[in-house]
Length: 141
Ligand SMILES: [Zn+2]
Image 1: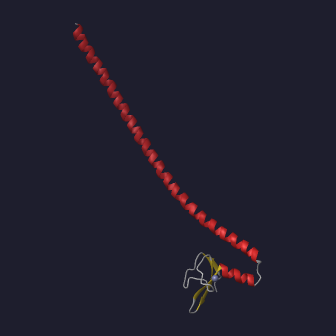
Image 2: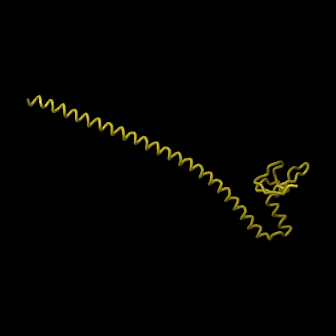
Image 3: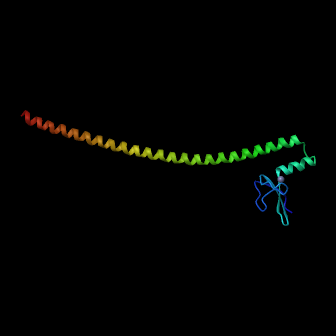
């Protein structure tokens, strides 16, 4: 016989606690198949009821543990969500870095083009000055 184990939710028929029909996880899978019923699961609430009945633990102590377990499960879920969000943010940051690199490359290309245009303008201005001097020379002679 397989050992019982705690699982997130019932995986096979009838997908519920054998005693109260709750489907709430985490739930104990007894790994026992009951003919004409299916898999025997035992929910946390029923397990707690019977643990109290056998005097395995004081009610308050059991309540505190139950709260701690619920809190730990909630924190685990939150942690999983945060890790997913972190993954999304990393992808976004990588995309923004790529955009920044492309923008820098574009700006460098434009700066080079502007520099070329300035050189051309300076050459044209110099040529114009020369032509003006020539025209001025003809006038003065
Ligand atoms: Zn139950």
